[in-house]
Image 1 (cartoon, rainbow, N blue to C red):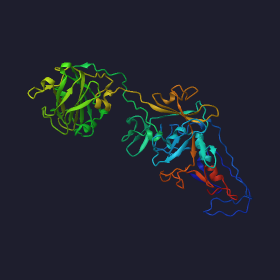
Image 2: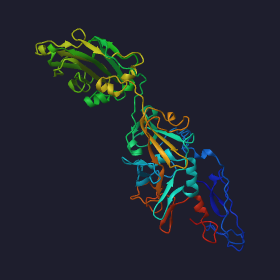
Image 3: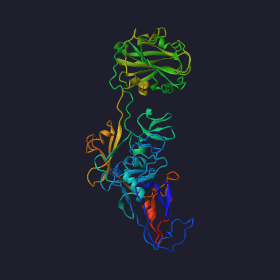
Image 4: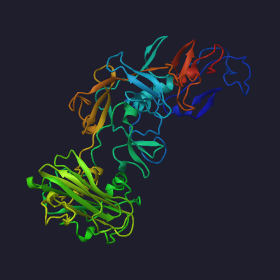
Length: 542
């Protein structure tokens, strides 16, 4: 904080808009000041008297609003900080680099207690990060009180000190926050809270850090797909073919590499298409359909009672290919045949395998393919149980010899094929509404205990709970869990793992604004720092 000198005493210039600090006294005979003595009796006073302080503070009800309203650029990066941002140290009653547990209730004696320190503002399961607690719970009045005198003490003894958030009525002064528990990260740095990767800057992905922020699992992500109706498997006699571009130059060296090479969001325009069999030109492995892409071919084929038994399947392709069969119940799958790596098509059935199809019904076939460059495509053949001898010919998989069905993807539903689960299981992923944890800072009665209310994993948005006619933050969306917003401060926590510059002078794990009063530590602010005298001196030498 920038400071200026008034009568040899340092005062914060940033408070000029909120208060006027007047120091008045009289006397003479004082010693002259030197450069290394900035806290002396002013030379024009006639006698030693305590300083007089007058505040001119507006009675502005907005001082009871949230300190962090998600509509400011707190870190001066040119963008509004519209949600929790982990790279910001939020100021308040909680130490951003401490971890807290709560006693678990909303009574006057319930509180947050610091249990450990942290170098990165992340904590263990069951603990709350002090940084996100400040963002969730602090009002502008609380921040001002901490600046001036260390915070509002609700318990003050030689053994413990508690600070309590200001009373906030259960009306428009209450505020709410949404928490997903996920943060944008580039692997090293963590920034804004997010729901999807698309919420993050280039080079960042949305990762789950909920347990390390609020001690519990993240809310459900949902999917970004806008299509929410059911997908029917009623396209008959066809195989669905989807094509995806990728940027990883993968040939599909094994099953894991092959599946990982898919970038589901990169579904090529014009796909999916439907073909009658694996002899279709679009899948021809001796033709060049472009570089750096994946095919996925999907169909279910009917197995009758007479067809039960050991089936053989063969696959060929350019480059890596594999064939997976999933049983009708969807609870068992087998990679029956594969040809991994950078290969040219052999137009042969060498890469084959056998699987026992012992249940009647529709069995699912998924053919996966990865292309690096050159020619590309995939082919699949089969033999039924009665035709598995080496002399029996291989039959091209298709509708002329099998009863097939595949999912019908209507226009506008292409996004259901852009989820990784579709690549892995063949099930189109319809859109689901993302959820979030809801928090509200309020007080339920006049003079009551200030609380933080919590509703977990809700499709509702925060304005449905908070921004409505009084009473706000009620039980209309479910029974909330309430936490008293009261915290124990100036408590020693060992070891002190906080970064350099975030520790107290004694590295005791106490907050940096705790002062030692004959062995008892208390939180202090500007009034104590520049108002506590030494008898003959106007200013403190703290």
